[in-house]
Image 1 (tube, rainbow, N blue to C red):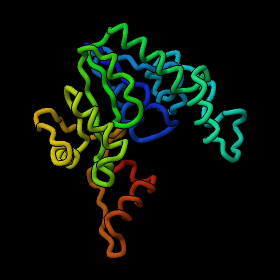
Image 2 (image 1 turned 180 degrees about the vertical axis):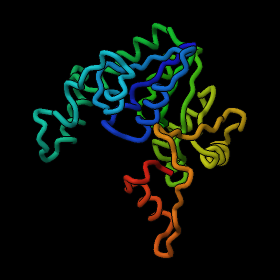
Image 3 (image 1 turned 90 degrees about the vertical axis):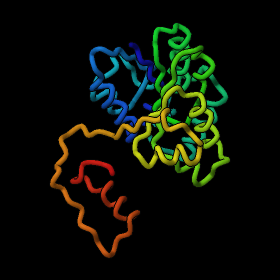
Length: 227
């Protein structure tokens, strides 16, 4: 079996979803081959884990446009140039061309899209191939069900052959908000790269609500994991 991963999950230099995906790839079983549509990337986990050989730095990015020094409207300038000049050697342009080539070659059994946002360019190239997506939350459906992100997620969910939900709550929300058949969903919890201290206890505080407690846990480096 061969699994082809989309490149967009590694768009950011750091991030929870990109780290989870990198950890999955690092621990892939030897009986399953994988490929990632990635030619250029500055993601720290891709570099640290060495999961993709010969990946090069991004020639033109939000961070190094003209100079690595921050200046006003830098991101706006990058977005404008990237959207109007397809020859600009950005993360999106280089990797998308490579991804389309791999999709057209067809040497894969499953295409895995670990996100439910971004560019759905790949849908028209699957041509009968299996699509698996990962749904991390349903916040957009709760807050803005008619927004662009919600509509894209619905489109991907309807096309997907199988859906990975990262929690039972996300699975319930998929069924509730998008009317997904339960048999199409598998719950796979995020793992941890390091052994977890099962004796760790979070003491409740009368001064913290659930949201504040969650934020404190995320920001506390000594905890070492996300809820």
